[in-house]
Length: 188
Length: 151
Image (cartoon, rainbow over all chains, first blue to last red; front, side, top):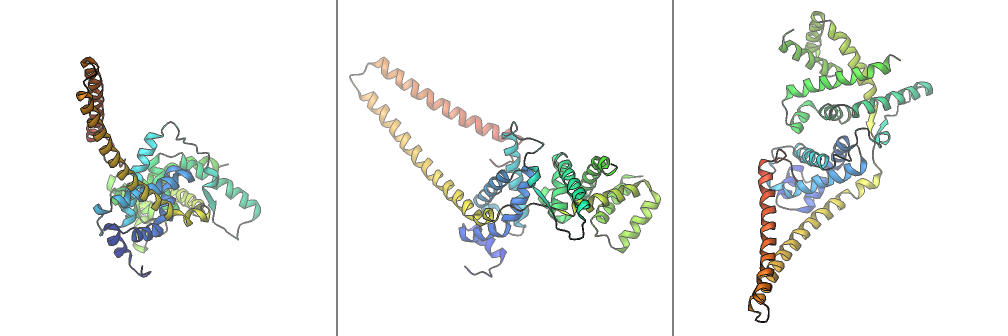
């Protein structure tokens, strides 16, 4: 297959059932898909499983995909629905305080940090991550999409199927809640 | 403060925290903060929070995860198709087998009528139960609040 083939053409071919073309689409989006699933599930193995299953569902539903849409926006809706089902089916086993939290984030290297400050910074990051995970799911989701995955407001609006104004107010509320929870640590 | 002003102020705070306000928006935010100074603290604290989160990222998994990612998706797609074909074949064979069994049962002159009726009743009961369960699944799906959720 021509390596320079556009994403649009790959999507058209995928709609016709071309597995190779769909494979290239998967390779383009697999990292974003995995990280999005990780933000939802908090578990590496579940994120892998769910994000892959969402691609399988997407492949089966490709005939209904409208090529004027962004693929990832459409995919994310499938992933989110799949996650809601998974959460409902595993309600007994889904734990809010996640055992794997410690391995789910890392610091971006900053040569300017002193060692003592570095320790404090890591502690603060750990606390922040824990507090993010304890937020309501709609607030946690929007914080992770914006602050950790750097999606634009418009992309978030499309992914969550909410108006742009709601994205802004929800993001404001989420940050406010998170900030209020973090206040006690800042003041120490 | 009316809700329009509040919404606008919140939007500008979000944009300022994300560092994407232009000059006009900065001036608008400044004016609004002069009018509603209680939000100034909120802005500063949210900025402080953003400073911490901007030095964090979600950890990458081991490289093998992405090396074999598509192969795993492909296998699932292939297996899904395999299961569909297998299920169709199984339904055809089971239906045919049941039909032949009932036919042989009816034609068996050595078997007593009461036994024939009993066996046919069990089979008919099983078919009705199966149809009932399938119909219930469809009914629940129609009224299920999760009907938009893909199974």
